Length: 425
Image 1 (cartoon, rainbow, N blue to C red):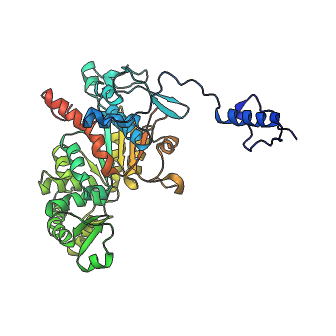
Image 2: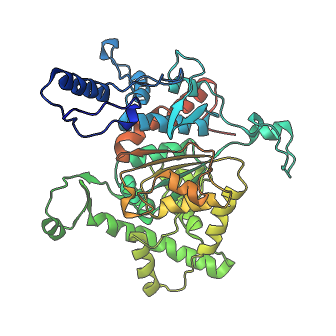
Image 3: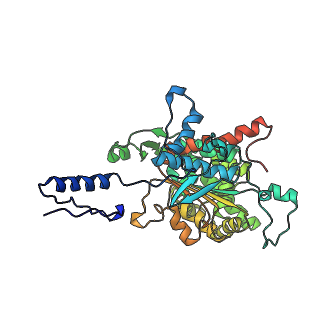
């Protein structure tokens, strides 16, 4: 029995091993088939293709260059690099990106500059960067067009505020680097509670029953003494009393965002995210306000001094309008759950965000919104079809400080050198 001749089309090669007889010709034919199966001809790579290359520590310890090298390292390091580029497009200007065969290939305008260096040379996006659209109904003078910037939505979950990432988020708010925040209830209360008492490092393996008996609450490998929540009750109940009195005497309609703004005003502590959001007039929306210790305090308050009303409807109108009337929007979402969907759904009202970065460890296979990739949001109209969104599969406390270092922090330092501050208009 002789082996079959290999097809001239490499794609048609059979996957099972060829059967050869003991003759020299049969063995030769089998060897040829095996050789052709292994060495299928490659198509030429396009000139714009980027070679995989990591950082060479022979060049010394240069942290900006180390971070820049992540874009060409591969795996999630490249996702981090793409996230940096996407955020720089929100902050500084439009990027130059092509999509080829489902993969993103960055086109370097200056070949010898890294992807991040190119982004740093871009001007921050302004409406004046783009021509007047044929369907524009509102007239802007050239000066006004120069002032219209990309509106950046930042979302984060409570555990990140419990962690040291709180200081990173506070920095962004302090320097007016984001425009709108969506947080979980814990993302609000843990910020305030840290002004009243510290959170401590512990261990993931500490026994729950033992901690409970000692009045210590575990958040991953962090420990929060129950005394902190007692201090929070002592501090926040009088604030709720004042709000109820203002509701009765002045007819004030409180919303989750105005309540949080009031907490930031009352805490008056520069270490607080809410404090700087109040100072810089950055709204913090919290659609699940009662799902945490703050909700517990509101519940207890109904027994002591009932009648406080918090209006959710006004806030959904406010955040949706913020998206609808924005000329360009970007989403930076740390974690999943309600904060992720609330931002994405607001951007649905404008047919999707222009830029998007997700950072979480969620997987899409259970059908959850938390684990969904950005492309699923594209199908719903929550991210624009023309966008180049990025998802980084990583734990945010590891990668987000690095991303901020190569994006927002560089913008702040640049403005300091130029005599300005933050991301002011």
